[in-house]
Length: 208
Image 1 (cartoon, rainbow, N blue to C red):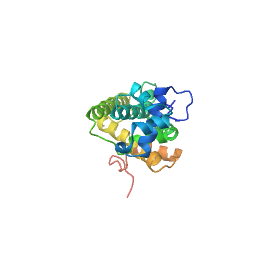
Image 2 (cartoon, rainbow, N blue to C red):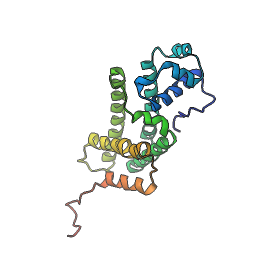
Image 3 (cartoon, rainbow, N blue to C red):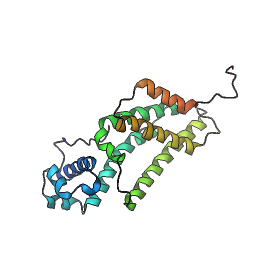
Image 4 (cartoon, rainbow, N blue to C red):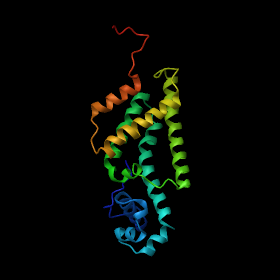
């Protein structure tokens, strides 16, 4: 199931209430305009309570970004160890990813907003997470090659990057940026384009 980043979660402890309030604030305003006082007010705690859990606004932003990123990555990782055909596994990843984006649209918008990339530590963390995810997808594609579901000449790493782009840029853009829904026929169309390409295979005679 997707990570619950709904600010209305009444059972959340103070630390999570602060985190969720901060996500809301960073979505509403530019990072540099948000203050710890505003975050504390939104969370219903004192300013000092925020500093009990987070050393600075920068530290809190890192935690917010990590929290949302981990929710995003979860939709991929939970399927990579499942036993199924590679194509079905890819479709399951896409469907779960769409559900997660739709349910957590607001919080995940933080991943698409402009953000202070001068946080080198945060940059490195994001790169490491993305590389780990890319490795998992490439291994899935290599398994497809071994099972003869995928052509033996396919570059697994490049195909993995294309699959991640389909999920993050194409589907993420439709749901989070355009605030639109993805239909089942669109999922099948996207997967078909990824799986079969758009060019005519010269080895087959399709006619003039």
